[in-house]
Amino acid sequence: MGKIIFEFDSVEESHDARVALDGMKWKMAMWDLDQLLRGTTKYAASLVDSSQQATNEEIDVAHKVRDELREILNGYGLNLED
Figure (cartoon, rainbow, N blue to C red):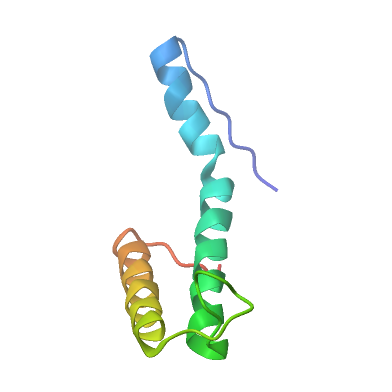
């Protein structure tokens, strides 16, 4: 297995290092959002109260937001499956 070494010399660079180190947290946050939207699109769980049935409008919006999220990630060369 390879090594990745981050070096930084100043407080400003430490911010960049923190952003790099938080990459997995960002991915997991996007995964959680995607799964929330999936619950609405696949199981019709309301975004407001998951114990309630989603309205048709909620389902439509969840589909659109989920598609847009995937397009944005794809534009950065990212995906949630890797």
